Length: 149
Image 1: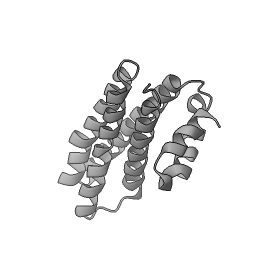
Image 2: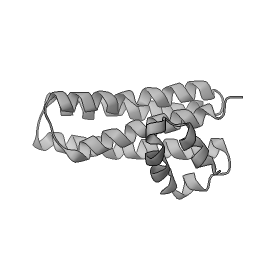
Image 3: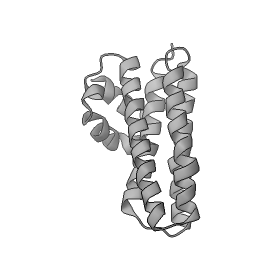
């Protein structure tokens, strides 16, 4: 079993297939030889996806100004990105804190999804962004826990 398969196996059972699909597509992740490297690569992917998602949501907000979208773009996603970066800093010296930070990063897309739904905004791209960043939060948290001795 590859490291990424081990991480996906420990991810919530309903998301294992999505986890495998997401991680297999990233060469750095699929070829990682230890849990520090794979977790750093997962966090890098999470930061990239969250940053790209924030840009998309910000541009969407310029065209469809809505308080829910604005909150996603200016508060929720920046918080997620910050927590993913915090997890990277904590990873080696305190993997439990890193795992918790990665898990907390999932609050951004989770709350964003709720806000978008409550505002009756139907944009499949935003739904997909929220789903993927939330999934990466779970995956990164699981991967960081693999470093706890």
